[in-house]
Image (cartoon, rainbow, N blue to C red):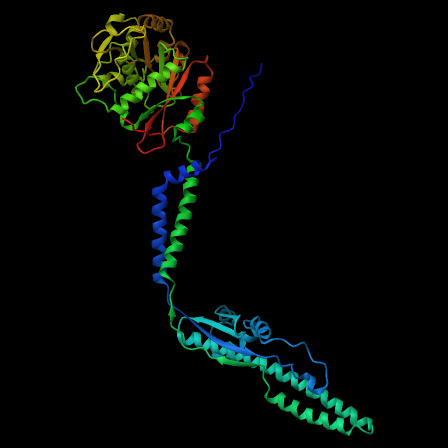
Length: 520
């Protein structure tokens, strides 16, 4: 029979404005540094640029066809000086013009290179054509602008004179036609054309439609604006850093916030533990200073939330695990057991991490004899029990009623602890044995709460032997350490077992993060 599993797509990474602001806040230092580096690079660039000189010459134009009617012929459409200037502006950088400029200047630069240093535009107010040229020296810039302007004036005037020459030929042909016809009464008409022919011949030699009205002067240097360069560098640096931040965030597989962990594990978050509390045991009477109140409150909250997993009925046996090592499961298991004991409940803490036990060392207790020795039949139950006394926290509110509703006895809270025992190569076999199942049943009858510190879920099979035998499961995930793949694998591993009340504890919360809230 085929098993059909439902594949759920990963939640969208950026949905709301808060998601984008989260990335900007997380990488704010990198963004600021790269932005400042960009601004500094802009200043350096501006300082290293050689000065650029820009010179401009102005040319005026007039329509040369305005007087065609004097010879009795139809005239062309009359253009305004601005229209003529606009027409000439488009021809300034043509190869024919720039070849003449190159020849006049006698420079080795190509005509195309000279064209790249020249621009032309028409003034909207005066209608004059302004020819601008840039160069590495003021003299070259002025010479280039004036030479281009002179070539443009020369070509325009030559074209105008050619038009008058062609017009003179037309009038001369009309005179020849009248004389050959020998028609009486045409003497006055011949005299008129002869007079106009003389004027057209004169215009053909001296007329012009363009004039250089303002030659280019030697310009001063114009360097790139340092402020503008710095601003552009800053903007480019910020854009580059923001793009890098989102690229890095989108490829980062680590879970950083409680919201991301809740979505990846698909479990309710029952506690948040600071990074400062990692590797410690809250409320342990070992002569050291008391744990900060904020850490004690975190485990009190965890204790209360676990009770709410089953409708305000506290689970009796609790297994604490994680996807991989280093996620704070030992800290959570021990401190949770101390918090439950401080509330007046008979509590047993069992170190079931038989591969890398750490509880005995933190509590200053010998590892053996312990649970492995008992399961191997080497010792009796009385030989593995250790009594640990809790410290009285300052301002404690843990003098809570016992589970039966009566006030607890007036004694210092105590916790019973069973260490891991002698090292063994058969950890999975011992935890999956019938003897261990009996052990869980016996301690569940003797104690109101039993907390098991187990091995990680993914590297070894030890925890899988215990999952089905407990009342509740606490999974620890460390912020900015646990990856999405690890969370998915842990979720899949848990789904193979009968459903148990399961909560997620986010560990390693750093001050200033989204999940950090110091009230005490």
